[in-house]
Image (cartoon, rainbow, N blue to C red; front, side, top):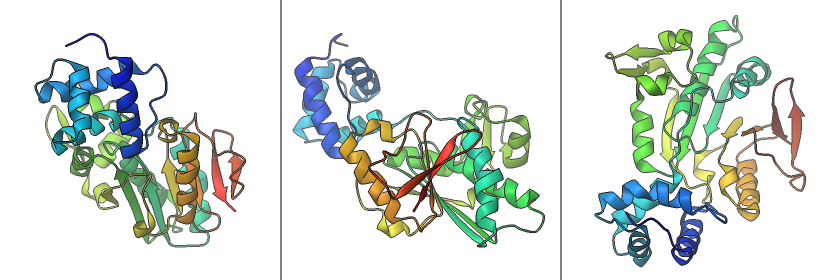
Length: 275
């Protein structure tokens, strides 16, 4: 493989990526782009990343384009990532929602391989299990991502030993997973039936998904510029009722210019409430 990604090829690909999926690469991310494109380019017989980018930009091979885009949008994730958002969901948010309603809908945006969506579903089941009669009659998680292969993997709900070791306690593993073999674990049916997976580009309309009580949009806004972040947050707001909740990643925040959200600080972490 050629060692260097030229500045021109990088700039052209950054413009293409921004136009197609909204991701902003920024300056000096050549190593990241080259690293993530490496498998895709080998799959299509290229050993020069600049030539691969040139072929992608010509737009003659849709499979090549999709593969390149998916290389840049697919990220590893963990069960119960950062822990506290899921503890807050089970211990604070769900009890408050249960005081006024018996149905709850949650959106896991940019769900990747499904760990976040299934973690949310497990917290719903944990809440109902321990709620002493004040449980939800209907729970639903809509999980979305821009990558179809990633969604197919998430929908299967089957994970290897390394994947289930990342953030999943032994107790939760035993309660909500089936040990298929020495190397694979599958999400139990009671968890899977709560989750539906769908393709969604965050820059496009969400209106067909209906309204949500809570939106997890964690560790994805960092890939967008300020204009697109504001656009995404405005569209998320449109899918929330008054008092609907948005949970972002630890390094993300809703700017004060978007005054329709109020920050709620908790002993651990925070979330935003639509006003």
